[in-house]
Length: 310
Ligand code: NCD
Image (cartoon, rainbow, N blue to C red):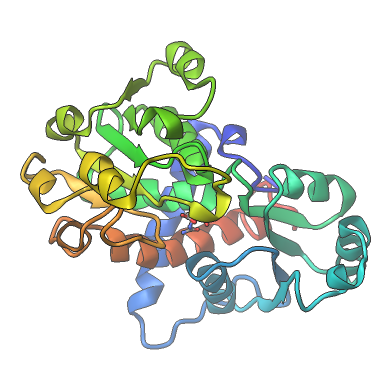
């Protein structure tokens, strides 16, 4: 495996191998000295053309804990803002001899295009509304840790699905692992063409959150992405919270063992109430912690594991 561009490129065995390696990587987090020699002498560039808190810092921490040299670049501080084309910029970085570029870009497909131009490994850290594969892997890791194997488990993914790259990667990942998935959103935030995908793949679509919640093992709330919205997708924030938010009242609809996920950043009071975000069954901070371990595992499989580029 040279690149991580889409969950669609991974088999069930590939996904399970990444999750299993992440389990051993997770132990490093509890050590006093958080350092493995695995990627000594390797150079990784985090190239982020969009804002990020969790993804960028956890990829950087993952690289550092594995002894790689990691460097952060953003669109703003580079020659992209002087008019240099994306192709010239990434070819320039590649010519320095880096081993990997971790790319976040507002254009869907940008990491794939870059992978065709350069020699180094490319990781997609979120491209437009397309995919965010490392997020789906860390979500699967976190749910699997809590619920056991995900085969046959029921996961609801709820919220602004139209604009969500997390949705697309999670849907592919969960279905590949054999989970049952139900998507819940207002009709205006249900992606165009999703019914045909659902019919072909066997997942469900619902507009009724109250009916779905009692049946799930995990509910994944997705952020309302106002920065990607060009028009009004729902009348008011209050109405959205009442009809599709994980409110305090809705928590009581969940089975005792059911868990709550959110990839962050959260809009508290909109898609998720403070009661839900801070509940004992909320895995939100567990997802962040798993993010480092899963990203260490991804770096391992791409740069050091069997079939890597080394
Ligand atoms: C997500 C993203 O940027 O795609 N966040 C993340 O990486 N944890 C989801 C979002 O922005 O809502």
